[in-house]
Length: 123
Image (tube, rainbow, N blue to C red; front, side, top):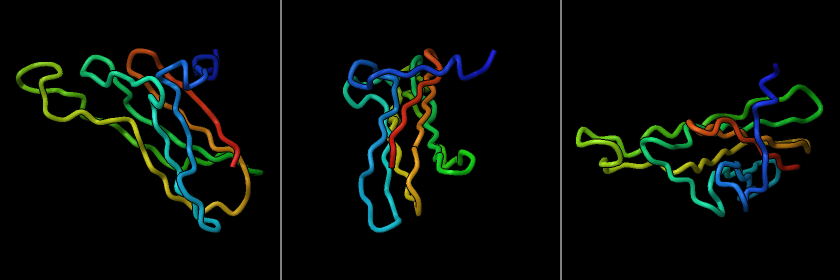
């Protein structure tokens, strides 16, 4: 069984786990790309249920390239108990890169309960 059979996709407006890719700015070949989870429907991000990471990839003419990963490590944990901590990270990441050819950006997010989710954006 291929791992690709386990990666889910959906419309981000109807599903809180789908990574949303936005090109925030583009100046010549330099692009700033934002990837977030929960754009329309907020993801809970609690000690029990959270987005652990977002990966961003680029597919041009050659093999797919990994641009980077953002990990979200604070989910309200505390010595006082679950969700009692002062810090909760939100699943939003910015990636700045130089792109000299068009291609497709692929974002993958991982929810500790609901698994892997993917979206793509032509750039």
